[in-house]
Image (cartoon, rainbow, N blue to C red):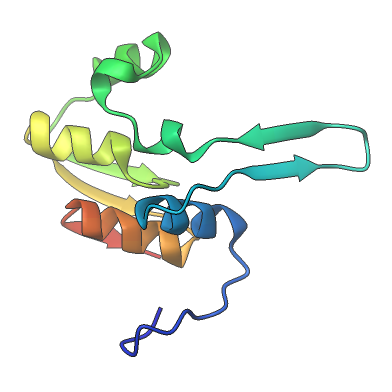
Length: 114
């Protein structure tokens, strides 16, 4: 996205899904591979709050220690944001998706980079 509010083209399907959901556009992503695998990605899971996380996600937060966290492949930043806002960690999120990083920052992640 540029400053003129024109959408830039990204080769970033998942990031576009995050961006659209963040902007209240109701979309899903369907992945179909040539081996017959088909998956539907609902973006709501990427924006869920702690109370709605899977048990394995909640359990993993108990293993975070120290004062700083590097979240590799942070996506929308839901885990990073939880650790930053609720647990007081200094969190740095990285992702290959420019749109995911944009969403992270707009949601309040202080440090995030592509």
